[in-house]
Image 1: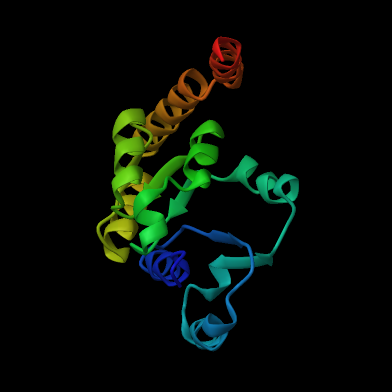
Image 2: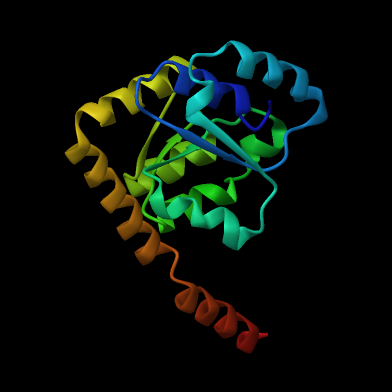
Length: 168
C-alpha cells in the first residue's frame, strides 16, 4: 500500500480505457484487500499482476506502455529520495504521474515529463485528459526522454567521477 498499489488501482477504476500492469510482489498485509478489490471492481479486468520479475523482463512491459505511475505514500524514505523508477520511466520515454513528494515534484518540474497528482482522482483526471489529447501526452513523453538522455548521461557521470578520483 505504501508503494501506491491501491492509489493506482483506484485511479484506473476512475478511467474508461486505461490498463495497468503491476510488477512486483504484493505485501502479505495487502493481499486480502487486493482480493476484495479484484472481486468487486469493474476495472479488475484491466489490471494485470505479474509478480516479481527480473529487471529485463519487467522493462519489457515498458516497451508498450504510455505512462509510468509512482503513487507513493509520504513515508520518510520516499520523502527524502527520488524513486529510481522515475528516472527509468523518463529514460524510457514514459510520461510520469507521481504523488506530490518533494523530490518527485523537482524531477517532474525539471524534466517537463509528467504531472503531479494530489490524489487518486487527480491521477485519473490526468489519465483521462491524456486519453482525450494524445498530442499532449506525446509531447510530455518527448520531454521526458529528451531530459533523461541529456541529464542522465552515464558517460558524462563516469567522467565526473573519474576526474574526482584523479584529484584524490
